[in-house]
Amino acid sequence: MTLQSDDNEEKLNKWRDKEEEDLTQLLSGKYKLPYLDLSVVTIDLDSLKIVPEKEARETNIAVFQSVGKKLQVAIQSPNPDTTKGILKNLEDKGYLLTVFMVSKNSLEKAWSRYKEVPKFTEVTIGAIDISGNKLEELMDKTTNINSFKEAILKIVETKKTHQISEILEVILAGGIKIGASDVHIEPEEENTRLRFRLDGVLHDIIFFDHKIYQLILSRLKLVSGLKLNIKDRAQDGRFSIHVKGNDIEIRTSTVPGAYGESVVMRILNPDSISVTFEELGIEKRLFEILSKEIKKPNGMILTTGPTGSGKTTTLYAVLKKIKTPEIKIITLEDPIEYHLPGITQTQTDTKKGYDFANGLRAILRQDPDVIMVGEIRDLETAKIAINAALTGHLVLSTLHTNNAAGTIPRLIDLGVNPNTIAPALNASLAQRLIRKLCDSCKIKTAPTEEEMSLILKTIESLPEGTEKPNIENIEIYKAGICDKCSNTGYKGRIGIFEAILVDDEIERLILKNPTESDIKEESKKQKIMTMSQDGILKVVNGETSLDELNRVIELEY
Image (tube, rainbow, N blue to C red; front, side, top):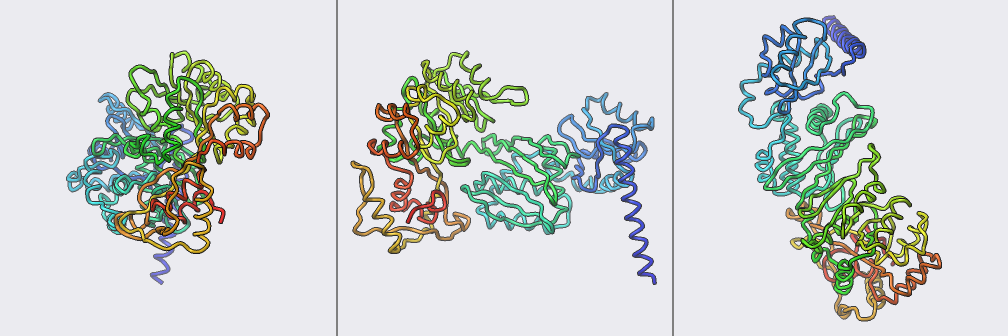
């Protein structure tokens, strides 16, 4: 009987709490203040101290987050004179306030955290500021993906709030140290999944409960400048951290899903584009050809491939290669991914009407020698870029096609006149990124009969003049497992490339509105390897595996 009575009382309390939250949300609309439930938000104890507990309770207020002079403040109602007075007092002290309307129950939960303030002051990192020193300390403790999993599991299993509040730092430190390009936080029906993208492939890291997910989400929104109370539409934000001498930018994207907001953090680490033109992995003969092409004073060079194929990294490597005090280089990007010293970088802003076409027109008035346009997406941008290439500028850009031969038909499909493509385009470079085998654990293996047939057929078809490997004793490698590569078998990536030069024959062919296969056939005379041939040679040289190459370009056995 007592158990049933307790159960009924618990249900009644839950109903009352829900009714209170619903009423608060309704009133927040009347007062035009954003509503917030503090039970799903990280309370920063250092921020809470800005208003002493006694005063906070008397004025029905709680400062729950802060970044410098910017405060996130929760109030029960904007009407009482005591509340108005404390808000004005904070503003008079130079604070910039963002005020949220919350229920009395929410405020009680916030106030209950005051008892933790003394012991929390020993923690060097706040719930908002991302400390570079703390990240470096955590990175030094992370040796591989396994040590990272252990560190995050230890925090997930703890019940101490001040340790759980550090979980964002642990995730970022692990991602940076291991070399992740993206961090995915994905709420599912029963729990939340954390994944890292390593060398272009996603890997499961850990699952944790929704309460921890809510704490991470709240904190991440605050550091990224996103609105806490917006959950039904996508938001984009960013923040920067200074770690081990590098300014690393984190781009945050949230999208509403069935079980909560899906989060992706893109880690823009300058170390990831420190690769030089010589280190891209371009085959010797093609490297010599491109080295001449990028030094020409005018014309257009296009890199092609799907998203994530390394086009931007290649263009940045080219810019670093040709940069001298004698030439003016301007870029137009969406957005600027990495900062290059000595180069003027600009960014599109479509909300203000500053797109690639408008930006390119503006850049041409800046007396540039070299222009890099992030992407050619439409006819207008293509026309302006081609005109720039025809009027004494070297133009570098990207295009979404599957191979080098598809560049010209793609430009024609956009509506560009073949008569202008032919004299403007110097070269088209297609590429993919493949993972490199880990040198510490790769396993030597004899190719199967089918694999050997593919390798021999490819070697036989290599262009005349290409240095061919010895076919008498071909051995290949497959992925192993070790700590150094976080048990993936791969460490780092390298490019595979193919190119088409617009010589006299290709120029005449362009004027006839050719198909992709027409261009492929004609370009064979240029004796440049295809991506497939380049990839097979990298397999034979032990740089990658057939499995990896087939994952990226789908080999024809």
